[in-house]
Picture (tube, each protein chain N blue to C red):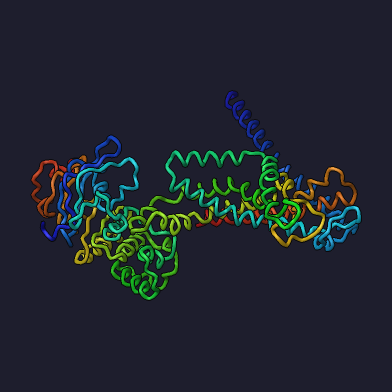
Length: 252
Length: 293
């Protein structure tokens, strides 16, 4: 097995009740790269992303078969889901800071894992905010409510909150779709700088974004991965007619 | 033209009818307030009984012209406080169980039971308290009777459950699912998510439920009358002591009282009224604070 492979899915199928949302997905995702998932709405890209940290567990009607190998272990089996989620963090489409202070938002995850030492927490909060390029903007109001931040700041706070868990992988589900272009640019810069420490997997509706930030791109259509390749190849020389149609804007 | 005019007139008449209906509530609340305050303040204005003695006295002996309600105020507050102390945690955990933990079938059954509890007439709570709770209290009580502060607290704790459960459940269910997802995605367990994220986010709604529960407990009369003992004197100093809440004082004697005695029963009502108004103001403030945030 290639040591650089972080996630390896084998013949992954997912059903919402009778509806099959993912069809036989086979994909290898490499460590410390940015992998982007593109495709029209309802194509299964978010659903697939949520398989990688078992967020679909929260939905009753979901049935999954096939394998998702994460660091050599099938995470579809009986595993410690909490441990998985501390190693595979997630940033959501809509910024969702908790209605508590900025400090408490960052300290929440580590505290849930039992970290109590005030000094350690202080350091962790500061480091996480610095890595998320938010420290300068909020260092004087760490005890103010996180809900008072702008949308872009809230999203960077959510990224900082995820970083505080020191995960190996960060999943991002359309993290900039609710943000203006300036906030989007800041998050994209952030992703490029986070790439050296973390494996990033991002779902995006913006093909320009995928082109700017990702190393690999997967094109999803109706629950299938049509094409998965180096990003420049997907955008300049797609092998499949449907990929070409999508990226040139002929549908979707 | 004529038809449009007639239609407009009809609308106006219907609108006026609605207004009259809406006025029934306004007029009623004004009438009750004025009536109770007018009668209740009379003895103090005409100096037929000193206000200070009324508010601080600890004996209620109409035969000897002694009308002190201090021990009743204390009894009402103790009973309400005790009921909140026991009822609220049970209610909140019930609401959490229904909305976060139970499967849809068990949740439905529990919710149905809670709704039924809300519909039981209060006299039946009193009968239940008298038949079941009072004898149990008697077994462990150093006193010769089971009617007591403790029995009152138990009955009231059960009676406030429906109010607090349903309002808490509603406010828990409107906590955005994004908060829960965010918490789970950070590796928090279900219980951690509930206690650290969901309940704090639902806090103001739950507080509204608690305050409505306080209002229910302090205003309850019939059920309490059967289990509290209604002594004529004495500040309760133990859970096994009898109490005489403000409400039961009025209900017990209003039927036959006359003169100053009757007026001072209205005065008891004024005190009760003031308590309820404070509670209502608190609710309004909380609800506003919630909308404001």
